[in-house]
Image (cartoon, rainbow, N blue to C red):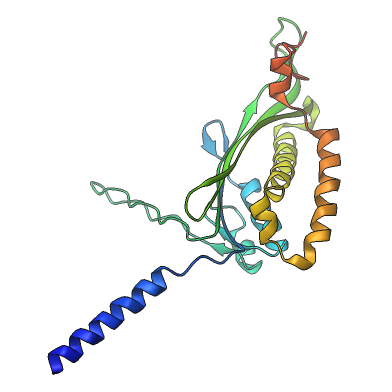
Amino acid sequence: MNLARATLALALCVSALTLVAAEPAKPNSVSVAVKTMLKNEPTRTQVAQYGLCTELTRWGLSVESRQPTAWDKHLEKAKVTVIAPPAPPKEGEKAPEPKKPETALVVEGTIELIYNPTKFYDNDRELTINYIQKVDVKVSDASGKELKHVAWQNYWGTNNDAGHDKVIAECERRCTRFLLLDLLKIEEVAKAIPQERQEELKKFVADEEEYRKKEFDDFETHKMKGEPAKGSDEQK
C-alpha cells in the first residue's frame, strides 16, 4: 500500500511540474536583445537597447533586457528585468548555451554604425562626418514564428566641427526612435499594450510617422536610384 501511495504521489508531482512548465508566457511580455556595433565592436553604452527597453516599459509591456547596457541599474529601477549574460567559460570548457527567452514576444538583432564621410572630389580631406545606421532586427512570438523582419539603413551626418561622438550619439537617438516606431506598428506588439492606451498609441504612431517622413534618409533608396546618399564618398 505504501508503495502504491508513493507511486501516486510521484505521478502527481510530475504532473504538477509539467503544468508549471507548460504555463504560457504573459501576453504583454517581451524580450529585447538589440546589439549596437561600431567598428566590429559592441558600443560601450548600447543606447538603442536602453531606449527600446525603457520605452516599451512605458507603454505597459513587461520587458526583459538581454543585452547589457551602461545603464542596467536604471533599467532595473524602471522595472525592466535585466538578464545578465552567462559567465565566460573557463579555459578548456565549452561556453554554455544562453537560456532562451520565455516571453510572448522576442526582439533580437543588430544595429551597425558605419562611417561614411563626404570627401571633396579625389581629395582625402573629409568634409563632413556621416554614419549609416544599418538595422537588422527580427521580431518573433513565443513559438519562434517570425512576425516581422525590420531591415533598413538610415543615413545622417553633419559638419566636422561637431565631432564623431556627437554625430554617433545623434545617429543612435534617431535610429532608436525609428526602430521603436517599427516595433509599435507590429500588430502583436500593439495588442500587448493596455486597451486604455490604444488611442494614445495611435496618435503617437501618427506623430512619429510624420517625423520619420521628414528625417529618415534611406541609404538603400539612394543606391537603387544610382545616386550617392547625401554626404557619401561617391557624391561629387
